[in-house]
Length: 389
Image (cartoon, rainbow, N blue to C red; front, side, top):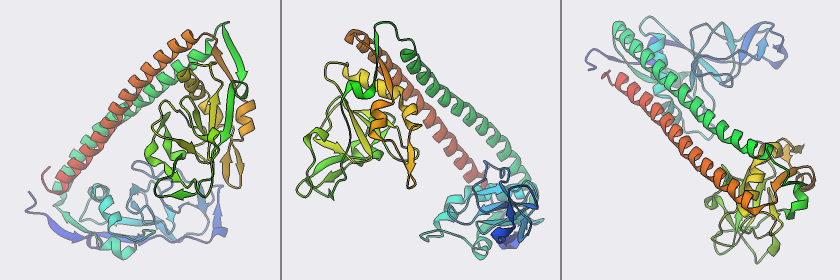
């Protein structure tokens, strides 16, 4: 229970120092002067990472063991300083005095990160020295703080190990499927053909630049609709056909493969149209790749493009800050292999679909476990600061 806990403000038990950035002329990357951190970019799970910039002129300093708080979007995340450093406007130092253990304070701020952020409410949220100082905290005696910190350290160490193992299992699951997919196409035999993508496609074409409307238009898929080799129509929008027509050949068909053709991080994502519920097209950031009829068992062509997905992602070129894949690059620079036999293609599809589904279930299981571990951390922290640990 919290009978002997006392309500304080951060300023009563800590020194708060707002960061201040030196002039840029004092910065260097050669290690001269003090390490300089502008914001949370180098934050780790608990301790701030190695510096990338140093400054020969010092403004505001933090010392080893000080708590650093991100005070500009995002507001609230905390890390420990690992050495004497200079801090810029994106950080603040919260230095505990003898009334509170730094570790107890760190856990408290971690537990209240979302609350601190949500209380700001600005379009570009930030928090200042006075606001940090006004944060209320309930503090038990030092010996009770030590007991709570010891329990939290042990529990969180076990949770961290469980998360690490789960993340490894998740990564291994992804790599297992990728390895099998690559082996299918690496072990092609004499009855396989090799052609450029353009030679086996009757259409390789970008979509339209739509005029969007709210009701009664043509469904237009965008980059958000393509993820994990699936098409999610929920993110689509409607195109005004009355004010701008769309060629019927650009209406997507069952068997088409859609390729994200622009963007950093989205370039190269592919998904096959396996079923159609309504007429639809794609916007100008997506390329429709339509196989020549009777050359492929439909679902096999989809896996062909999944197989070269990473290669596609590497072939984008920058143009005005935008990474883009040219249509002719997609047509002419990518060779694909496929067996002549529809029966063999279908056998491969059955195996890949089955393994893909099993992989998906495993991934969902591991992701759910990670979510539960995060919820467990929150639950334990709540008990700690409710005085029930």
